[in-house]
Image (tube, rainbow, N blue to C red; front, side):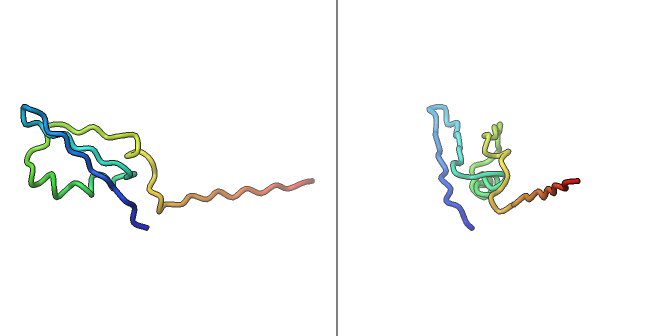
Length: 70
């Protein structure tokens, strides 16, 4: 399922651009902004939000347990 993502840009008086991706998990944020970043130029630094380390919703993990009584 495609998720809605919002990208915020802040442009400082010195010309520094800060990009923030909201509503994205895992590497989706990097993929979403890849083409825009190519147009903007060299990336000085990158800080990943906690959502980057969350699993994508499309990945499901299941665990099975069984209990035997003697």
